[in-house]
Length: 490
Image 1 (tube, rainbow, N blue to C red):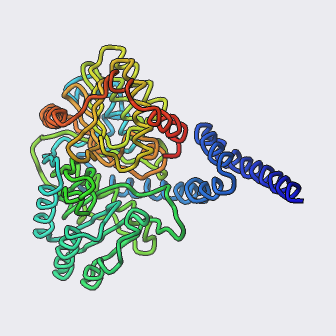
Image 2 (image 1 turned 90 degrees about the vertical axis):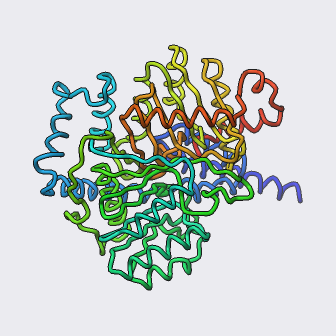
């Protein structure tokens, strides 16, 4: 009797799993790698695997809303282009860039101008050349500079962050924003619904009571891991902008007992590059608050005459963009490198295109160095990264683990000429699922400053060489193999 019951349960489980598998194949038919990864999860873990898929994988209704968001974003870009400050200057320059036959030697090295054109066409990223940029390699100096700019704000303060912790630095920020709101400054703070889920709403009460506005991007009515707004933007009076890897929390100041020192990278921008950050904020805020939209008007884009300075483009990508612009720009950077490629990322889970591009570049004699944390915050991602790095060792790529705390920087530097810094990691989640933003900086001096810090960080690294990789334990090899199979889901 018991045998018959167990046999029946087995048959039911088998057929139910077949149905679940068929559903996944139907919903994920556009991405074979993701399909196979989810099929493995469902078949190995009956019922539980499909529940995990419902939580982490299946959100087909979102694609329609993101398509609608992209159309609204196009309208915002068009309205920005029609502002008086752009009619005779910026827009004409972009039109000249879009004619490839007449493209100027804008980066200082002609073969790299294709990257500017790519960012313009795929990411609607306006090229600006009148910027000054301050670089922060840790959180304390970045937050002090940002709080000082907030204190001096006269017109508006727009911020969006993936994570805002219930922490001392968060309270300082909210107090500073609340004070400005009471003075009549327009203050809007947009947070991600999942990244800041654990933060009590009480933290924001002083800001709301002072007249500031709080927005929650895609609030999770159930657990929703995918499609998170990973962007970190602060714009003050349209004059100063901040973008990079630092969220709001005490761990980003190096106060975490688990991680200790926190190595990150953030930049402060003055110049027309700030306008690109503000445009992106308006796009994301209006998606959150369609009935309380921010209008594209001159007060948010003040015209400031500045001499020629640092050239840059700010590129956004995610479910709300037509092309995976940041991903494609990384590939372009890798393929255009002549001498060196330095990469610093907390999560290295590349897709096949990135992996092959790095392998080909290394085999072509390019000096490629990749740095990841030695003490990861996501073990599966770390083991997957080791698997990919091990594969690149054969091609001559130099790989390093940062030991002095946690490295969270998202940096790609090539040939001491171009650097990218922003929120996008070198992983599939940043390329396919998250809303990201990255600044591409065409300036040799700034790129050399990033590279100098990278080389200093190498003094705190253990190199992952052939000997190190060969001597890893059997258990580590098993973890790598499983994580590699799951990498499309990480």
